[in-house]
Each structure stands twice: as C-alpha cells, then as structure tokens.
Length: 332
Ligand code: TYM
Image 1: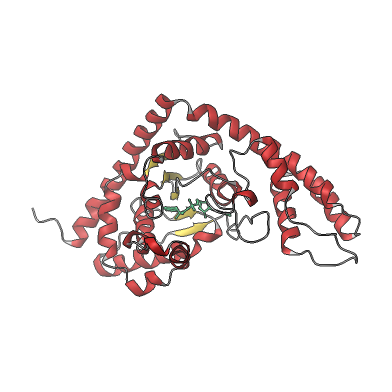
Image 2: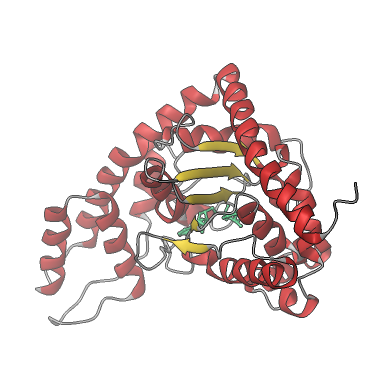
C-alpha cells in the first residue's frame, strides 16, 4: 500500500525552541517511518518579515541541523529548502487567483504582523497562507503536523485546495492539521503572557540552543506566586504552564509528586523549578550538542540539501504537470 503523504515547514527566523519541538518536530520524527514525509525550511516565508538575507544561509543550515539533531533522518524523510523547489512559486501564483483580499486580511497572523510592523505590510505577508498552501498541496499531502498557532492557516489551505478542485478538477486531497488525533499543541511562554516564539519574548522561551545555565536561569525566573492556601484551588495559568512543561520532559512520578504537593498546599515552587531546570537540561543538552556538530559539517549539510531538493522537485514536477493539464495550460 502507498504511504500517505505528510508535509510541514519551519521558518528560519531564529533558533528552534520547545514550542517548535513539541508542536512540530517531535511529530515529524514520529511520522517519518509510517508516512511519506516532506519537511522543509521555509526560507521564502521568512522573507515576508526578514528581508535582510545576510544571515539566511546560516539560519537555514541551523534549522536543518536542529531537525536532524532531534531525530529526523534525511534518508527516511525528504528534508529540503523551500526556495530550491521552483514549482512552489508557480503553484503559489495560480492559487493567488483563487484567494480573496477580504479573507486574507482577516487572517489572525496577518493582523498581528500589521500591528507589529506597520512599516512593512507587503503583499507577501498578505498572501502568506497562499504560499503555505502551495507548499502543502504541491506534494498532494493529507496531513500537516503543526502547532496550534497554525490551525487557521490549515483551514485556509483546505479552502484554497477545495476551490482549486471545484474550478479545475479533483487534484488535491484536503490537508489536515495533525497531532495523532489529539488537540494541537501550544507551548506557552515562561512568563505566562503568550506562546514561546523564535523572535519575541526570548527570556520566556526555551531554545534548543540554550546553554545549561541559560535553561536553569530562565526557569528560575519563570513566573510563580506564594502558592495555594486551600486544597482544591485551581492553578493559575502560569502555574499550569510549569506543570505542562514538566509533563513534557520529566518522569511521571516527578510530576505526580508536585501535583500532590500542590493539592495539599505544601508545594515549594523554588524546588519545582529547580527540578524542572534539571530535567530540561537533560532533555535539551543532547539536542544542542548534536546540532552544533552537524551545523559545522558543511559538506554533510550540502549533501542533505541536494538530496532533499531532488526528491522534493520530483514530487513537485509530477503535481505541476497534472495542475497545468487540468487548468488547460498545456498548449502544445
Ligand atoms: P513557524 O516557523 O512559526 O513554526 C514551526 C512549527 O512550530 C510550531 N510552533 C509551536 N507549537 C507549539 N507551541 C508553540 N509555542 C509554537 N511555536 C511554533 C508551529 O505551529 C509550526 O508547526 N507558517 C509556518 C511555516 C510553514 C509551514 C508550511 C508549516 C511554511 N509552509 C507548510 C506547515 C506546512 C510557520 O511560520 O511556522
């Protein structure tokens, strides 16, 4: 039986963090055996907010290295760079004619970016979800492992794919956001004010590149309070966050120990954060060390990128041939 197709991407706009890991990369690694996977570094998307390309090569290489350090095997999954597959831009163009200004302007991420950078509201930013749709349906993917923040983009991808199918013919499956049947993940920031992010809120985000001391210090400074005084007190958001982080990286018995202490009001957040700091160091440091080694191996990274580009282009060429045909663009 043919394997089902999976596609996802990460922008090279900064170091990967725990949100990227638990929202996306962990699932990439889990899916690479059973599915036919295409994972890419979204360098074209990064140009919508980061037009300066001087650091781009290093950043692209770092995302690749971090993906591999997390357990992605470039022999099993197709790991490539978005700009190496020119067909993406062609499909993006066709899909742009099926995307309406009104719906694009309503996208939450677009409105956020307009607020953050009113001086750079470019057309690429407006059509960001169209390019993302092109990435996904270029491989006729059915599943897209992403974090909660990408839910709306995936809904738009389904709309654009369906619109194409209705107008020109049934070419694309409906792509679905994927997390093994569970709710999509959102890893919150340590100060309880939003989510972990590559470029904002850096002191409240744990990066896969953080040193052991940075990890310990960030967790030490995570927001807490004086603790519950009555059993059965619901956890405030920022405390719930610490427990969620702990459940991601600590043993079940450790989590249970602090849950019990919370419930009987004996919890000492200092101790909890110290324990979480140690467990986080154990989780992040092997990834950081592996990524550093890979990142310095330029020959290996070049070989990975070439191999990935070749496999991704093959899949893209097959789709685009069908697309041009159903659109009636095959004049000779
Ligand atoms: P990006 O680069 O912002 O994030 C990459 C992946 O990490 C997830 N993520 C999170 N998950 C949980 N908690 C968080 N705090 C958190 N922060 C980030 C994101 O949901 C994402 O899965 N538009 C995409 C890149 C992209 C793409 C695609 C994704 C381009 N083309 C095609 C899927 C398919 C983005 O900006 O991801």
